[in-house]
Image (cartoon, rainbow, N blue to C red):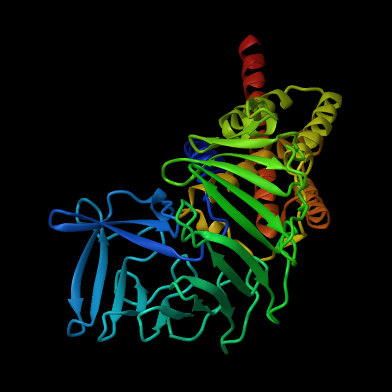
Length: 480
């Protein structure tokens, strides 16, 4: 029994330490483009070695946020038609990159087109990377343009990626820009992906100013090529650039401005030098500033943290964003509540539990923008990204810590394991409400994280209560 308690205490301490280190580790980089279908690899050549940074099609760094100092060694194989890239750390030890693979075999045709990529483990066997596939095959037109991409598993069988389907086909305009993207199933038919569309059409500016070559209009269609709206109610958007500003207007199926489900029609953004978003302000269909559900007229992203802005663009205080930006305070509060609840009277524990449930409701469903109902029933999808995405890791930790005080308070009311069903039940009700109200993503992983938080709180409270009882007993014996 003592060994079990020591193991449990050690696990809780390790979890606390992990939380303190990682709960605020996610840095928000809002990309200027709403759609990012490709990762572009930018090579930075150095002396006697190549290192690679990964960025989206707008040049915003993405995959490199969790990997540093990775050295890529390349060697030519298959009689010069392939290049094997392997990843090593600064000590020349084999490592996996953030996408979960150790090496990638790039194969080329006689025109120099990259026609096949195979992601591999340390033994050079195909492996499913975090992108969801092991192999991608690419077809080109006679003039070298990518016209199709298909995804396969380790056995080279077609595989479906929720965000990209089984692959996609590209069509180009007269200037060589992608004007139509069709996501496809394993038979090459249009396929609706996770975001809600099967086809994207784009038109570009043909001007001599800053807008030249950039997307002007983008619209979304279903498998039957009929207009379809996304989660916020928009069928497409119009974008305009001016210096370091961009103006995004959401449109209906006829290309007219539309009031989205969040209430705004347009977003005005200021951009940093790397094209990431600095601020964004929201406007109604008449062009007037308008507040969102939490009272903010806009947001500012500083040092990876989101700050609310008022109508004049000045920073405004929000408890919700403050707690998200300073999640260590949530950990400190949970610890304090665990200790205090161990010495509280039952009536005060009940009051504290009721008040804290209101805090949970405020953080999860109150004053949130609405959208179309959205659900993710894939089990453990976020946990698969635990070691690859700092943002996902921080979200998981927040969801766990949010329910730790509930488990602790419930232990004081009824110290039986059956009480652990209550945090799960509360979480299920929240997810159901989020689905029907459109105030958040309804997902199974949140229920798992919340239930785990309740369990940790229950166990921690039990240890603290037993420790306090032991100290009291020792004090009485010492006095006697």
